[in-house]
Length: 247
Ligand SMILES: [Mg+2]
Image 1: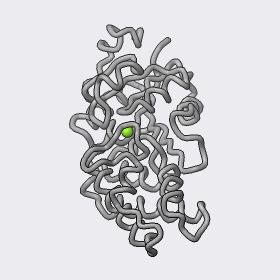
Image 2 (image 1 turned 90 degrees about the horizontal axis):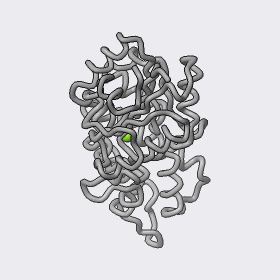
Image 3 (image 1 turned 180 degrees about the horizontal axis):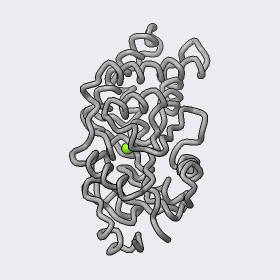
C-alpha cells in the first residue's frame, strides 16, 4: 500500500535526546528531592530517583521511564518511593510542572538533530503528511518544536499528557490517521526506542528505527522493518529496496 504519512517520535528521533533529557531529569530530581525529602524516615537520594526512571550516571536506558514513558509514569514511581503527604494527582501535577520548567529554563538544550530539518522539508514538499507522536507533555512538546522551528512542518502533533493512551498503545497513530484521512498501513513510524517500534506494530504501520537516540541497532533490529543511522538518511528508494514501501 502506498505510503502517505510519516509519523515521528520527537526526542532522540528529531531532537537531540541525551544532553537535554539527562540535564532536565537531573534538575527535576534535585527539585523533587528538595521539596519532598524532608524527613529522615524516607531518605531517598537523587541518584535513586534517577535510577528509578532509567538514568544511571550519564547513561539513559532506552527501556526506562525517561526514554519511553510519559511523565505520569515517572510521577507514580517517585510517589511510591517518597510517599509524600498529598494525593497522586497533586504530586503528578508538581512533577509535570517541574519537567516543563526545566525544559523552558534550558532552551539551549533543544537541538534539532543534524540534517533532520532539511529532510522533513523535502518530505513535506513531496506531499507526505507529517506527524509527531511523543511521550512528552503538551507544553514541553509545543515549546521545543517552536524553538526548533519545526512546528509548521507538521500536520499532526500528538502527545499523551494524561488524556490519551500513551505509546505503545496505538491511540496517537490512529489520531494521526484520522487527522490526515489515511490508513495505518499507509504510515511509516520513526523512533529511537523499542517502545516506538511496538507502537508502530500495534497500530499496523511500518517501523523505521533510528540510532540517534537511546537504543542500539541490535536492540531495535528485532522490532523494526529497517534501522537507519538517522531520519536524515531516509530515502524512498531505500524503503522500496527494503520492502517497506512500493513507492
Ligand atoms: Mg525517543
